[in-house]
Length: 172
Image (cartoon, rainbow, N blue to C red; front, top):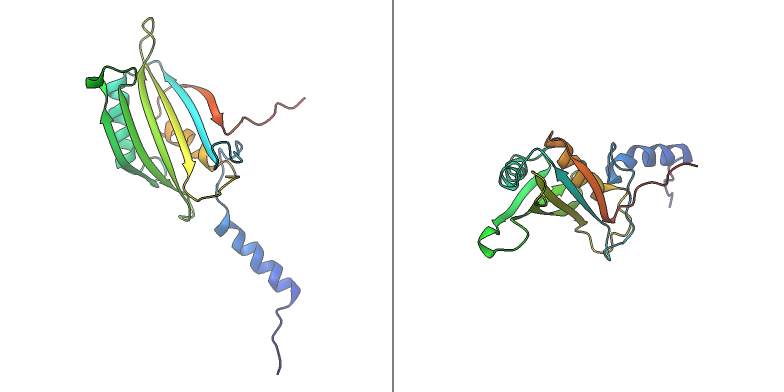
């Protein structure tokens, strides 16, 4: 019985063609990989928006999630007004992002606070976590999910890393 064996060149060529299909994060903004900070790959960032109040920010984030976001791969899950509870957070939202190759889903959580008393504006915590159990290294996808969404709002911001997705080392 004859067994067909694919030539070595053909195997490497097919592997090369398949790589974009399994890649999780498509550049740009894939340089902040997390390897299991939250027991799974995740990224937690905080954004300060000096030019927008919490209510307008909530409306903007909600509308962007509902419309698919900057890459049309975001989904709105839920959003709540927390002001009746008299706590520091005013709004909370949840969304989902599907990677560009439409293979992986990640959960996004946003919490919106008013800026401290002396300042006008809003602060938003953004968090993304891979939905695949055991996704230890995310190739920077969770960072990309949050920062790509925030950049898509086209509102000036200041970013602070909170947990996971560490910045790349500064070259010496």
